[in-house]
Length: 123
Image (tube, rainbow, N blue to C red; front, top):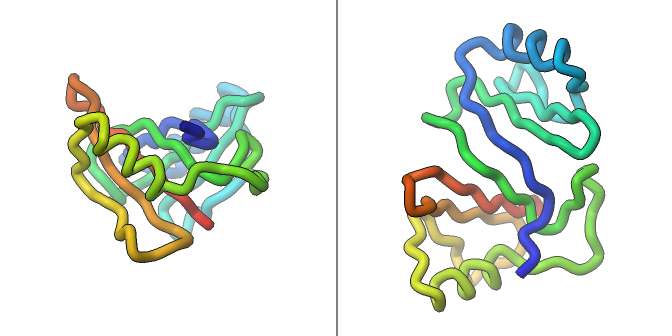
């Protein structure tokens, strides 16, 4: 199963303060927009998403169809295929993808300790 690009999505109180902090750690902005209350930042192969007032708590994020540089992959496992595999293996989903559709979609699940995982397909 190919989950795609990996990042940590952080729920932040002040997007500008968080941006400034992570820039001091060597991260640079590669996506998002301040006026949309989120930024995607990268340092080497490490990606973090900073999200202000968009969700509660932090989560692991996977993006099927993208590599670590947000380049489109020719071959990838659609989020609906991933969902089917997870459900067949007894994984409970908090939000399921509509299997009658194609293209962008996402699912949410929790690990055994309650950590949120987002699998977010953009294409």
